[in-house]
Image 1: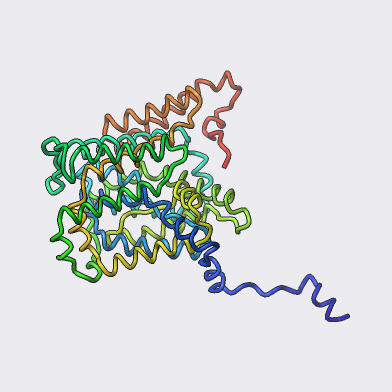
Image 2: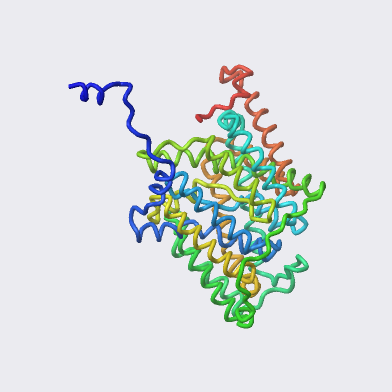
Length: 432
């Protein structure tokens, strides 16, 4: 009797699971083949952006593979869901579209973005910041950066590129392993498979990338013979005062609202929708993991990374159900980075740039399509003001500022007719 009372006593506590046991459970596959397929679900975005940054901006590929592999494994173990690790697209778009925005500026932008996200997460101010960023301004930045991606991609498709001099050369020949005809065939193939994106198949873009690697080996077989096994040398990136300034203004300012919306808030919401049985993933924890990843990796030249709702949806769609899905992908990246290092660049320099342009074109279209959910005329005006200023003025920071001003003016104009107070103009009507 006494033992029964003790068992049911409110003071009695069941033993808490060991932390290491919990991490191990988060990595257990729910279904082996489905998880393997799910691990490939986000490569359609990752591969073309990493390729473009490696070729156009001299990104350290070996270091990026090692650090992003670690990110994949750790976040999979912590969250127990297929949490994606994606490039920070706005920073990548600036680097690819503007040759003067080099690796020091890219890393400065990544570190600044990460530092702000970490502070917002640690202080639990993330939700408050989210409420004060109009969704129409975020969509305007996404549309501008997506179009910037697409315009650069068209240059890659039409013209021969001299990445060493950051210049476009003569028009691309129609025939050949890097001909215009091959690029057009790849574009038609993606359109036939994906349509308008309503049933987007990230795996098909991954297939295009793999085909491009095979063609690169055929075009430059001597590059394979020059492989040197072992990781590339990891060095601290030297960042000047001017690089910090340019990185913050041109990279951090446009990237930050996208990270708050898509990398933190939207990921938390989607993870709850897809995995209701799991412990709730908070905006605090996600923003802190994004911050920590880049506060460490960017100092050593690893590509700035974040999480993303689109990547999570893609990996779930292809069968990813556990942290083991992305952990497996992380192990694959680690192996490539440690075994081949930056020797892979010798093959990638022979990668068909026309095919890369096609991949970037669809990555840009995917980013720009995020703006299609703007339904009111006022929101559309803000989106277009933000986009036009960002593209014409070549400054996403100026576009962001003009978008905020346009949003406030339109809200104040409608304040009397809607019966709103001045305070409600500043407190943007949006659910957290």
